Image (cartoon, rainbow, N blue to C red):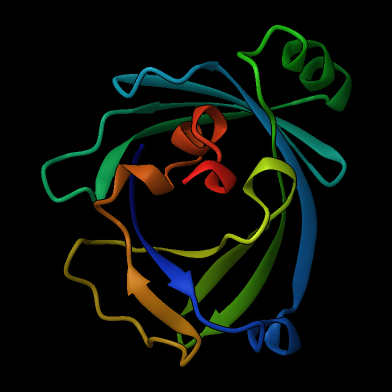
Length: 155
């Protein structure tokens, strides 16, 4: 139940030619408090409720619990969420033994494209695609919960 991930800005849209999957994601936050973020998400034809804890000092690891729920339940919970909605398309690209998830944001966060890679340990090696740019793992401005309340267009 510990999520270990690194986040990067994306320098070009070359990843789109490498993507094997893509899904539209709409998500909101029942709580965006860093110590207990509670997210409601619709990804494609599935709904999810996710609870995340605060990141450790490195910013790489944190508690995460996720449960699949129906899209109908997710739509109803989205009505209870804090103001703002994250709207993005997630592309999935294979890189060595890992899957890189690239989020292209729309709406209030249009212009931002960010990649995440989940790891088994904080020191695990992974192949870095050429379109991965600056690492922003430890920059809280790039957390979706932050973007929900402080949209990229306002930076």
